[in-house]
Image 1 (tube, helix red, strand yellow):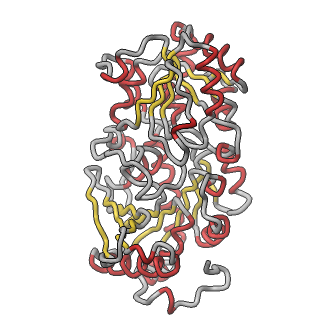
Image 2 (cartoon, one colour):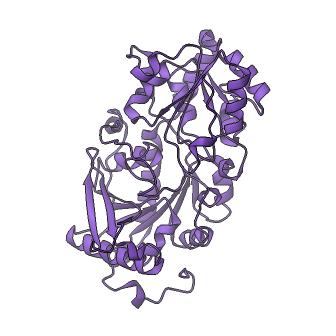
Image 3 (tube, one colour):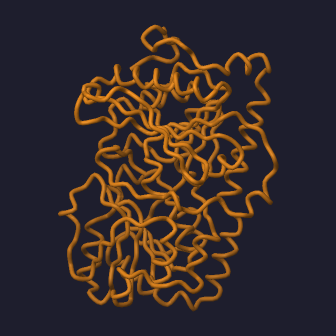
Length: 431
């Protein structure tokens, strides 16, 4: 997923999104971890994906604070302050509100956020805590705290995304120096990051099978999809620079008998560039809990990703979600889809519009293929967000146990000094 801005990105309420599966408590062991403070570039209420799946599970066992990017007001009348948003899955979303004058002064903005977080930690008695990063850019406001454990869950190669911060790669190198553990959102990303950190682990996109499996049972057809004729060829996800717009355009023009259903918010691209033929239907963003009902009404699901820098390392969560819903899938040759889904003949892979159309033709008949369905279910039985989360917990416990008790105790208190008063170590340069 791409970086997002509080002001520029439309929000989707996900307070009612699915909690961890009921089996989680039955299949996981008790554990003790410090408070978890997550620094993210994505809004908690935007799209329900990897961070929400994992952190909502952590929140069943301890306090989780999800620190979003700061919200800048349109004027200088507001005093810097923290807003806390309680979510029904137990996560506390933390947002710093800042005056407009700090928007273009990154150093002053980081300073203000550091002071706000220091005060917040003190008020909430956050004294023993782990840091969990989704964006290295958060180091500007957090590098001088002293967590017991630092985890970098690298879900995407953010430096390759549109509008990426020019310092992102340098900040990532600093984060590698601080991180005790590095998790990656796919195998291709792991192959890149393991060369940069000695304790990297691949945790590819997983699946909440019970949630998406609802699409295999009786569900009411959503009103905005009900009138669209069949066959329906669907896609859900953020519509941004990763979507192959020209592929979609060519498919829609070459196959007017197919109806293309596109679900998701349009971000970072001009909506005017999207194909507007009568058989392409943009239904906008949907809540996570609504997705199975839409998937049930599709004949084929697609991963319409372009071949560019922003897709080189992605591991689409929607791949197993489509399959769990019982949908045949056609994808462009994204490496983490080819391996394993293409290699196992669970997903059709096609490089161009002609081959993609031919693959959709085949996929339209695949629901009656009992062998494909059995092989798909056998593979899906080997993965789950519950298991991914448990494996992460096990690694975190091992690293915490390896630290000496004296060092762990000393590292449990946030610093009460200003960023400007701290001289960073040579190995962690400031930017």
